[in-house]
Image (cartoon, rainbow, N blue to C red):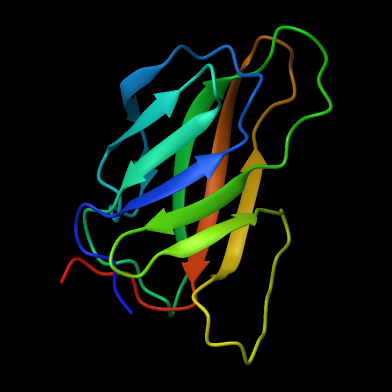
Amino acid sequence: ATLTAGGQVTITGLTGSDTPASSSLSIAGTGQFGTQAVWSGATGVLTLTIANSVSSDSDTTLSVTLNNPMSTSAGVRPTISASGVTPIPNTAMSANVLVASTDTTNTWTTKSVSESSKTAGGFNTLTFTLRPSSVMSND
C-alpha cells in the first residue's frame, strides 16, 4: 500500500498552543515531509504533505516547535491520520506505542509524541515518531 506524493498526514488535537497559524511552519526530520507544514493554531491541527516515501520498515521522526499555553495545562493527546491512495484512519498517539497485530488494516505501528518543555509561555519542540504498517511512497 502506498501514498503518492501530495498525500497528507494530519495530526490533530494539539490545542492550547499560542503559536499563530502558518502555511509554512518549519519542520525538521528525515525529509519524507519536506521542510514545511501547515499549522492551524486555532484548531490545533498540523498538516504534513508527503514529499518522499515513508517506510513501513523503520520509524520516521520529525519535529516542530510550538509555543506552550500561557497558563497551566494538563496537556493533550493528539491523534494522527493519513490520506491518499491508501488512507490510514484517525488514531490516538501515545508516547509508548508498539503494536503487533495480525490485522491487515493499514494503521500506525509507531505513533509517539514527546515534548522538550513544560514551561508556561515557553517554546516547546514536539517530536513525532511514526511507523505505518504499510509502505507510504510517492509512486
